Image (cartoon, rainbow, N blue to C red; front, side):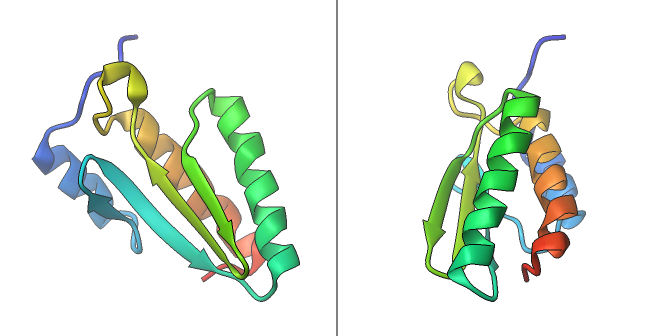
Length: 101
């Protein structure tokens, strides 16, 4: 199944279902605050595992107690696609287990 860029309306509709996520130029992004650097690092490892499973990778940043992601789909010229939202939903599902807010 080919991956297609989402329209602005499709992006806005999907973002409405993912509190904390926002459109940042040509990508979606979110930051999570965690209780410790170790907890943040563990979350980064967990996200990396999910990205490998989905074969879809974000820009992922660890900064002391904060984990930040920015996601778009390089294979369609850096547009936002359903793949980006699939990854965002998976990260949302795992975040509470790491104590992320």
